[in-house]
Length: 157
Image (spheres, rainbow, N blue to C red):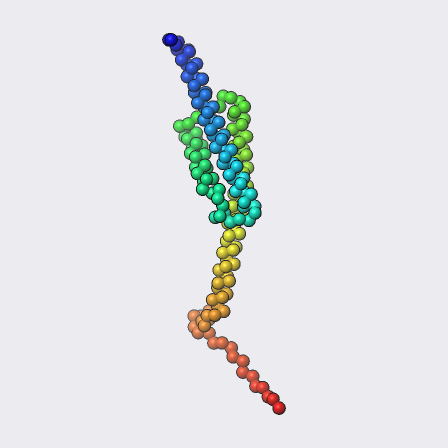
């Protein structure tokens, strides 16, 4: 079967459109997975867990790198996310907005977790300093501190 130039162009357009749709659907799946992970992490952070103990961090970082790479490719013009399907385009935009909201909340919660960790560290360091000062024979000047001795007289009859 021999195709005309117009048929070949039409076939190429359909193929590119189908490939674009698959790419968009794949990106939507990536965004949904990343959004779910971030939301799960936000719940854990809301419970007061330290950020270092969260199990989602590695997977979130891996997916975020894939997403960032896709965005960078689009910005550089090496990848096009032209979405002729209006419904698919709206789904993508909706997912991006949900991800942005989850990431904004995540940023606030992570900052709070870091501040809480810093407060805990400072409290531990202060307790250590106080304990060392209580048993140290040295004063603030670095010299041996003289202990105050009580010298009273007691008279008993």
